[in-house]
Structure formats: structure tokens, C-alpha cells
Image (cartoon, rainbow, N blue to C red; front, side, top):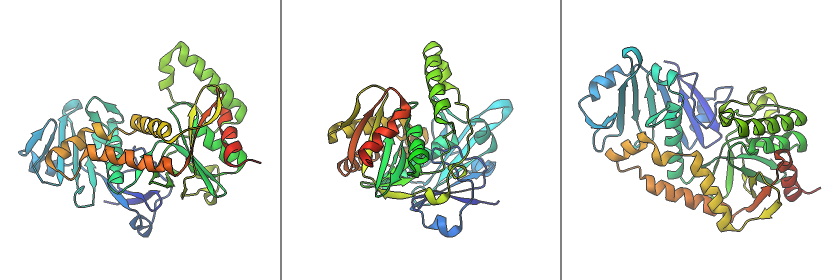
Length: 349
């Protein structure tokens, strides 16, 4: 069983897997990493594809918690339910308490379950929730943002979905020669921004076609809202296809938080309370570890994960981050103008 190493956030987060597909929020680099590089990470998780028949036989008599089975104090959890044509969905979670977290799933689970539907969550979502909690326990916090660095400054760009946060960072990188840090997700502590550069949600357009596409898409969403669920077309590749790896900055002291709003108004400096509430609200929409069926089931059998304490820790990290950065509300009806407004404040000519 061949495992490959992938470092998705340098020095912070890595994954070892025998699967070509991961499906979590933290990205998937094009190239695998060395054993040395992954050993430098604060957190390393493992994703394994296995039939899990032995685990099914061994754990079938354990205490049941909905579709999960476990026992008090045991650092493992098993999930099994009937699926299509007599097949089973199986998952085995272990090593959270010992510091060697591993999720094993069988092929039908990773092949067919890609989203969240009621209490059935994909392996990728479950991994994302687990990693979010592990990060919080170590004093880090995942942040739904894009980000770039220019000179000694770095900016985390935060916004509701489909507002323009990814476009803003990519315009800063392409048009103003900023260093790239992230386009959809980063990790922060109380003063440092660590980029997750391999999420690959970005699709390349020239400025004119991008502006036209966004306007057309917005009109279509108003006419027929389900259009919003369709993927945006475009050339979709990892960031190292567009810029050299020398222009990827993996970490930097966070100097500015830019919260985007699609409305007129320009730039406004936010006080700490306003910024913290907005930041926590936007992050809460993206990261759902508080309602993760796996984590809730695990915490039923084990006391080493306290989800309420994790939420409290998230608030503490974001509060300190806000205190240590200048927080800006950046407002424009045209999403292609956000980057220019930010640059006028962060790196005036």
C-alpha cells in the first residue's frame, strides 16, 4: 500500500494518503513531498482507502451512536451503513488522542459521497472538520480567505462567497506583482498568516472577460437562482502554472485584514469589535466542525475533544488577530476594483 506525502501548509499541515483524491478544503499540491518536509508539520493526518471488512467484524458489537460505533475511552470510531445494490459505506477513525489521526474509508464512500447531505458527510468534509479542531487545539485557526503579501505587509482578504475575494488576490498577484499566499483558505495564529496555496479554486480570465462574466452571472442568478450552483467556466489549474514558486510566500506577519462588501462606499477602517464579529461570522459559515457528526460521535465516547472549547478558542485566536492587524471594510459594486482600493491603502504609490 503506497502512501504519498503532501504538505498543504508549510510547517503546519500535511497529509499522507494512498488515494489520488482527497476532497478536503485545504488543497492538493501537484507534487508529493519528502518525508523530511512532512515531518516538519505541526499536524499530519492520514487518509487510507481500505475495504474495512476486518474493522466491521471487530467493532460490530460495540456501543452504537446513530451509525457510529465505539466505546468509552477508546481512541477509535467505526461507521457503517447500507448503500446502493447491497454495498456498504464504511469509515474508521483512529489516533486522534494519540496524535496520529487517521481516517480510513472504503471505495464506495470516497467515490460516491462528495458533499454533505443531512448527517451523511463526505470523507473530505470530515477530514476538514477534524483538521479544524486539531488546529484549534494547537492555537491555530483555519480562515476562509485569500491572501497576498507585498514588501513587509500581508493581507488576508475575507468575504462571503461569490463576492470577489479570490479575484482580488489574483489581481494583486498578476497586476501589482504581489506575492501569492492563498486564494481560498489560510491558517492563522494570533499574528501570522500561513498560506494554503494549493486549493485551486481559481480560474484564469483576462480582466475584461472576467468583468463581463461576473456581470452576466449575477444577472442570471437573479433570473434563475440555481445558476449559482453551477461551476464557473475557465482555465482551472494549480497556481504554480501561472506564477513561479518563488512568488509563493508561505507565511508572513499579518498586517491587514480586508473584509469585502459588494456595495458602494470605498474603504472604511473597522474597530476591533466590528471586525471580530464579521470575521467570526464569515468563518462560522464555512467551517462546520461544531455540527460534524463524526466529531460529535467521537466526543460522546472520548473527552479529549470539547467542541464548545474549540469554538471558544477560535474566537480567541481571531480576536487577537484583529487586535494585531489593521482591519478594513472594502466596498465596491465592481469586484474588479477591490484590489486597487486595498493597494491604495496598503502600498500607496
